[in-house]
Length: 138
Image (cartoon, rainbow, N blue to C red; front, side):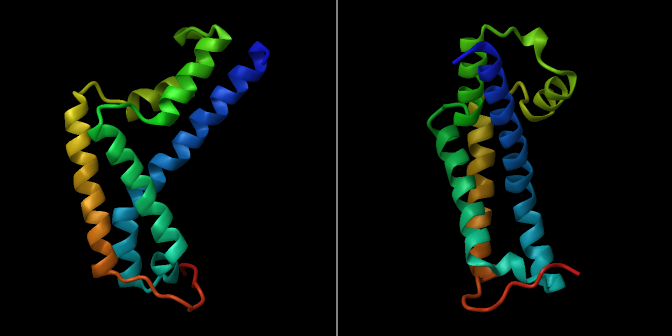
């Protein structure tokens, strides 16, 4: 691959990561709030399974002491393109500082496992409804 393609691929991975993070973070709040407000999508099997699976992947990587595979993938693409950190756009640098805190991996592992267990408990607290149409929020 040529350098511009690698940089564009790295940017795409970065923005995918920036979409996954709010999805993971918002779920534990949106699910109980949506149950209380009657939002049908919070009980949709596909949405809940995708959310729980994403949280489990993040927690498992952290427990193993590994960075997120999206972070590794983006870094690898940038390294292959010969990119330096200073050429990263300002919005990307700002979001990176917001997301990646300078703490030991065990802190993240404990946090991710706790959030994952909470999301798992929501399967019993806010059960999934099968076979019913999903209502969007009002």
